[in-house]
Amino acid sequence: MFMLPPMLPTSSDEVPVGLEWSYEPKWDGYRAIAEKTATRVKIYSRNLNDLTGQYPAIAAALNRLKPSQFVLDGEIVALDARGRPSFQALQHRASGETAIAFYTFDILSVNGRDLTGLPLDARRVELRHLKLASPLLLSDALPGTAEEIIRAIRRLKLEGIVAKRRESIYRPGKRSDDWIKVRFGNRQEFVVGGFRPNGKTLDAVIVGFYQGRELLYASKVRAGFTPAVKHVLVELLTPLQIDHCPFANLPVTKRGRWGDG
Image (cartoon, rainbow, N blue to C red; front, side, top):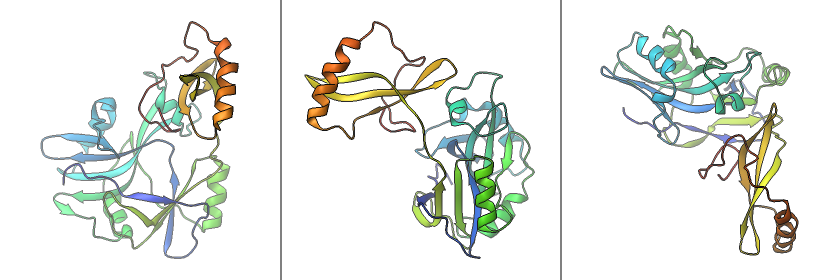
């Protein structure tokens, strides 16, 4: 296998209930595929971008695992000072200040055996055979009923839950109803730090969020403005322009977690 795109869950507002379902935490991080061959280790994103150089400790830990070949699916997560997953900490981590972990929840191949056609429960058995050590962590199915798991996830203030059919096979690059993700309390307050004009009207407002005293760039927002409102906003915002960027990090052009770049 090489550069296998991950299977994707379908979003829902309701957690499916039944004996055919199992439940995992929805980690607040970067989805990643980790691949080891006889000659190299590679970590890449859901869009097949190479992440290996950004996470050398994870790459080194993957290289130490006993199987000579495997492909793992999981999430790169930053843990804040309280040990909770923090996407903001992952985006703005500083050396020595943030613990980075790779939560592994699926195995697609091991020692040349393609496991994608096996049921999820069987793949989990194969995954448990790996002797994972920090920063590699196992994200296994949670014990208890759906109601108990939901209460626990909410109490821990995790991002949400992923329900997976126990008999589901792995479909690389496909979005499937066999995996259902549900976010709990998916909210973020933003501050308008700038705007981008389009002639005499508004193209977008630039928003961010505070981390301590720093205003960190998050996204630009285009949707929800009528033509008349765009003209009014340009008239109101133009006199407020300043000479320096209010964001601690410069806005980027690529699409990010909160929307357009």
